[in-house]
Structure formats: C-alpha cells, structure tokens
Amino acid sequence: MGGFFQRQLAVYVEYHRDPRNTAMHVVGILLLFTGAVLPLTLVKLPLLGFNVSLAVILALPVLIYWLLLDAALGLGILAVSVVLFSVATTIAAQVSTASMWAIFATLVVLGLAAQAIGHKVFEGREASLFTFPSHLLLGPMFVMAKLFIALGFRRDLAAILAPLPANSLSTR
Image (tube, rainbow, N blue to C red; front, side, top):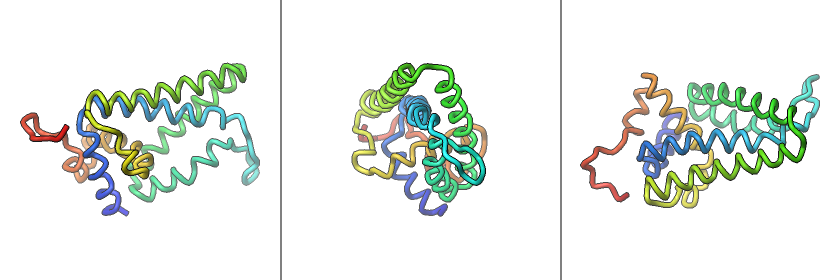
C-alpha cells in the first residue's frame, strides 16, 4: 500500500504545510486519542481468555489499517497507542466517573481546538477533513512520518512532507 499511502499523504500535506499547524496537530491528535479511549477503557470484554478493554477492541481495525498503509509508521503509532491506552486506563482507574467524563470532554475540546486553531491561524484555511473525510485517519500517520523524518528515517517521505520554501507562491 506504499504508493496509495504516499498519494494520500501528498494530498494531506497540502493542508498541513505550516510547522506550527503540524505542532498543533501533534498536541490535538494526542489529546483526542486519549480522550476518545478514556471512557472505553472502563468496559472490559473477554477476548481469547483475557479481559480486554473496549478501547483496544475498537482501535484494532484502525491500528491494523495504519500497519497496512506503512508498517514502520504503523508500528510507531502502535507503540504510542500503547502508552496512551495506559495513560487513559490509569486516569480512568484513579478518578470518579464524573471526573472521568469531565476529563474526556476537556481532552476532546482541547484536541479539536488545537487542530482548528492550527488550520485557521497558521494555515489560513479549513481543515482537510471537511473536503476529504478519510484524512481523519491520516493525521496520526502524518505526525508519525514527521517524527521519523526528524529522527533521520524515511527519506522517501521527506520530499512529500517538506515545508514550502519561504519565498513560495503558496495559496495560504
């Protein structure tokens, strides 16, 4: 799926050229993921002899999709997901139900706000999600690709994700 993923990423990156918007997406995606799985960690279901949270069960198809799009980036997201599942599980286990829902709402609102601000303030355009709903699933791949490139990996994606030159005639 490498060619398909690279084509999808090339379209996605046109809406995410400003590094400040990318930073807002890192924050937003981490907050949204943690918030979204927080209440789901409380529901445990038996699976193959283990009690597995509903959060993990519902996230599995998306995690598999990311692994199929790009194995290395998918593994990176899987590793981060394990950490975020652990954080959400710990929070849910330590607070009251009312507090958990308040934290859920706060994380989701802050995550959405970070991304909206990134697009409006730094890109000067609407989020790509409104034009391309599939971009909801590309955000984490984009952020992980940026991290891999910053660490010196994935030069094949560096050209696709390169920021525009300062003297560019961008339509921002």
